[in-house]
Image (cartoon, rainbow, N blue to C red):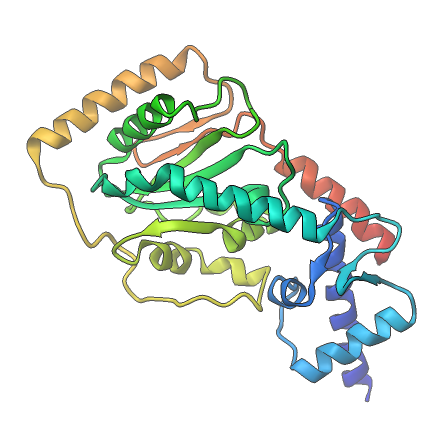
Amino acid sequence: MPRERAKERDCEANIKKTLAYSAVFKYPLSYYQLTTYLMGKREYAYFFFNKQLRRLLKNKHIGVEKEKFFMLGNKPVSWQTRYKISKDIITKTKESLQALEGVPWIKMIAITGSVAAHNADKDSDVDIFIISQKNRLWITRLLTFLYLKILNLYPKTDGEIGKVCANLYMDEDNLAWPRDKRSVYIAHDIARMQPIFHRDNVYFRFMTANKWINDFLPNFKFEQIEKTKPWVKGHSFIVNFIENILMHLQLAYMKKHKTNEITKKHLIHFNKNDNSAKILNEFSDHLGKVS
């Protein structure tokens, strides 16, 4: 019995931890979201989890409204409103970026951030993450930049409403997230991202290379594949030459404006307004209230 009660307390603590993280964004969770993104180190059987969830509700340790769960003392936004706004933005973004599927060096485009998490409001911009073919990152970045400029989707300022911010590029030879940058914040961002399209199983290769997210989100399931290295390699001397030229030209231009952005041969991350530390600090504050 003591072991069983310890397991029950562990499950209750993980439910509260998950809702504390969601409270940072004032976002309530559906039952599916709560179970899928449950934080902790272990999985729980369906009936066992439901028992602990009912106990927390009965003892008024957490709240529920319209079948959406939240941390008490933190008034959540409207789940239904945010979901509809996010779905509309995702649909519109897919249509706007569809032509980029014709670029052979683009292996994946995914929506990330608040839109992917279905927590966007009417003032949200759209963050996208692009994976390119090996050694085609800087060609891909330039083509994406020009495409967004032509469609008037490229933001003139950070967070511009309705614009598409391509703030993360990786090539398929660099799929694993840097070890020193891994956190519960990044784990959630990866788990919730919405691929617009992908080819050569790149989405699943990326997820497999980042299976460490299950250390934070053990219930989040995805298809893992054995092969995580590039399947198509670029050997064209001419295109390789163009890639190197474009990389150096873009780096030279960025040097004048660079703050804390990451710009490498296989990785570009425009994280000028990186809020991860602030979010993790707020999460810690909320966690202290429910512990």
